[in-house]
Image 1 (tube, rainbow, N blue to C red):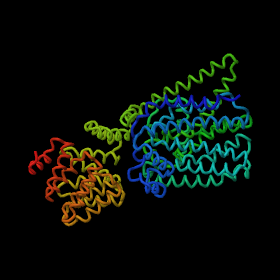
Image 2 (cartoon, rainbow, N blue to C red):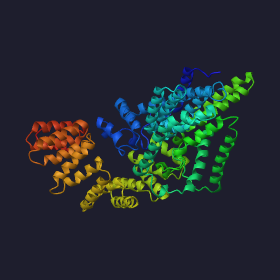
Image 3 (cartoon, rainbow, N blue to C red):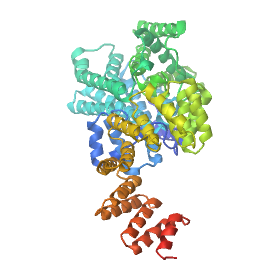
Length: 632
């Protein structure tokens, strides 16, 4: 018998998704959302071109994902609500497509589908708390979008497998390429398709089944190698923290599979950053690896009677392969596991769970089956409640990191990231404590040294300690461009520090030539050095080319131009642009007023002062200028 109509399942999934993820729907940016959502300099048409053509332009080279973010910014800008609602929609659609796909497969495969098995699998996936991280975190649209593309591609390939229509093959191939361009973990799809075809028929034919997928395997391998290169050389998944011997990686893989399976079965103590294990976990690591091999062998032995369990297990473990530890990914620096790593792989486990639960219900006496289904729905409701509770941790960064530290008190990265949030909120003393806690756990943590240096640099009398932390950050990581810039900024306002500041600015630009902040700082330094005004102007203009909506850069460029005879009109235009970008930028009005006084334009100067006073009614400089002009 078939399960419920798709529209009924869709309605149930929609209710479940809204209930489970609503606490996070108004959540702001978390952790690296700022690096994934489209930056200001990429929001134009040229930015879309750069997303596709420059490997280093985005956090990871996922051009389809970042193109989607680019279009979404056109629709709703920086408003997080749009991103959250879209993630929830994509997740819900994937749950429905998964259910429809499973129902189709079970009708074609061995045996018949137990009534409601596919619908239950889709519903469990929709509301399971392990999925919260992928749905509530805006950056993880790479999961929600890539999975939907993955499932749709698989659906069309099944059409091709049955009908051999070229149109179905082309459509499936395009969707697969789009999935790879969203997240490379979808590279497992051709292997998954072969697994499904084997499960359906008990055998594979080289010409019919394998040959059409050879181009897919080639594209998948190329995409995987490119992502591995980017992860190592661009993202930074390289160095001592990633030096694992082959035996360590093998033991790690055995443990990771069971960790993820355990979180699906018993989803408690979910956290954003799990403790980082010792890769060599003694007998436990070997035992878990042996258990994985034993389970695989046992399921293989009974494949003649039932291929489904082996197919589900191989799908789950195989889809996890990219994150089992055999390849370096940056998060391995602080944890070998993360909930969002198993988002795609989990659909195999949910398929098995839906099938098993439905078979158990069918095995009950007819009068007891409604009770069995009620228990299944109660389980889904319980999971939705747990997911809703987990979603609350994603309301904002501070809540998320405090939740992480409650569950993982040795998480040095959470201490650092929480300190960043606290510093931004003006909670300086608590931020200092958290930076020091991070460094106590991990003394060789360059980001924490640099961040602590930034906080200390703003504290009177703490500049010397700030310099020590900047220098330590650079000792630990000589190619740390941000630390070069931050050290240069402090040296530039330290007596006698101009020469060294200039050296660090130039090194930062060598490492990161497209950083507008570095060019702005360098321009400000050059502007006050004798005879270097032209270089300063070049750097201000280069900074504005990268960040055209910077009122400070426009205003500073105006000040520099005002010092050059005959360029006063250009200077006034820069002050006006700064005020247009930020109408509350008092400095732009005051700089314009001073120049207008010097140019003998009292009327314009009075108007500029009045605009400044409209923002800051007690501004002393504006009042003095007006007094000098004889204005009340």
